[in-house]
Image (tube, rainbow, N blue to C red; front, side, top):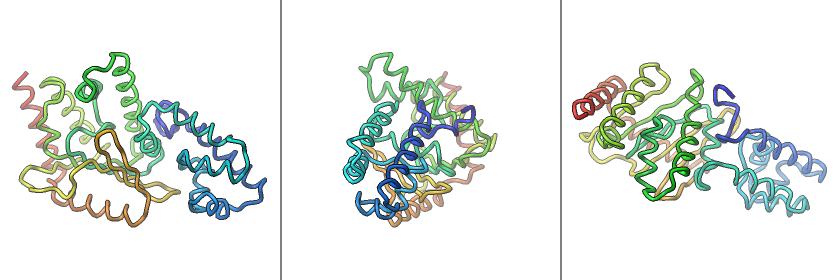
Length: 280
């Protein structure tokens, strides 16, 4: 997966979820259920059953448990779902969002505090993890950094997914890891923008109160509805209700409209990097 698109969940082949889906289709058809009929029995839509079968989306564990009960498969899908979830290098609350990043067509993110994980350098990521987990073992920190760098392999593809970020000015001013680490991070960010691999706008302090108070990520897909992901301390919330996703999209549009232009944002990123150099 040289371009990072062959894996829905980083560090784990998407084949696992595709196998889950193919087995689900076989067992469903053997039970003579349509996708809509099975969906009604496990309390989700028929289109979601289709997305599970295609490997586009993964079911929550409780949905897998209900599938086992309806299809009388003796816990087969529950055990497979648990195994795939446990093999993820990410926290439970982020695992599905990480999977969806790998199959998304577009990703838009508002970041109020840190450079988004997909754009982080290894040293910056290490500093972020050490800030949140100051007593973690070095081996654990190394594994978390490696998983984050694996996520960043999405950027190896020249155009897909389309990535756009709005960064609060806090992200540029907070010297995570010290001046040298921050300078490297800002230069990396500027390089991605100049290569036209990502789009970045900065929400400056002068913009006043932002429409969003926390991290928000919006993702769209070729064969599935869009989703929104928000995050708090040790928690994450994946939203797929169309009305709520639309509201999140409008909030993102408000933040983006208040941000500096891409050109002015790049100038500010470069200036912040030069400021770090002066301190070094």
